[in-house]
Image (cartoon, rainbow, N blue to C red; front, side, top):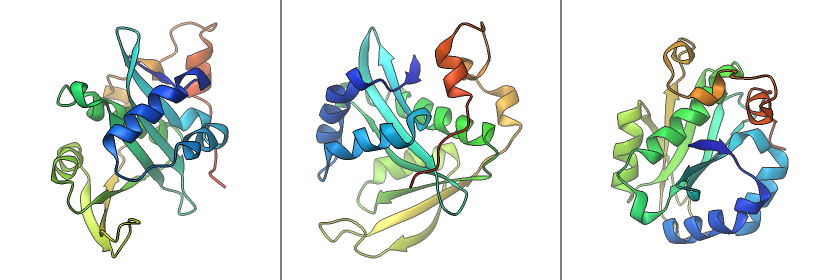
Amino acid sequence: MIRRFAPEDFQKIVEIEEEAFSEHNSLVYMNFYEMVGDGFLVAEMEGKVVGYVVGYRSAENEGHIFSVGVKKEYRGMGIGTELIHAICDIFIANGLKYARLEVRNSNISAQKLYRSIGFIQCWTEKKYYSDGEDGMVMKMHLHPYRLLVSKQKYLEPVSSDNKFLTTIRSPISYYR
């Protein structure tokens, strides 16, 4: 199940982030929650938070995927793909035409995942990461018709009293 991040998920997100990335700053995630609440989603299996994605509307009016992470033991199960589809559905619902992300040049498995979803390499940012590694910038055109065929049920109103659905359909915030 994919749902909106809640403050009680914070520690689990920090654990996933520390496991997945060599450089991390856990306070960034609470700041993102405060600024782009409906662009911060978590994947849950059997009541456990097993992954997350953070995205926001960039100054270029694109959907920017800031971070996506999945617990090691849950990788290869399609969770990362579903999280990326979920945030892209939110971007589309808010009228954005492109999604963008950055990935380490050495992270071949993530690049393969992003290409399988439809991202293409656009350019390289030299010494993008704090350890000096280059970052690959990837983009994908977002097709509005995707919402019509989307498997993301949380974007479809099921009942009017479902606060999560109402929240997730609200416009994503601008990151400032």
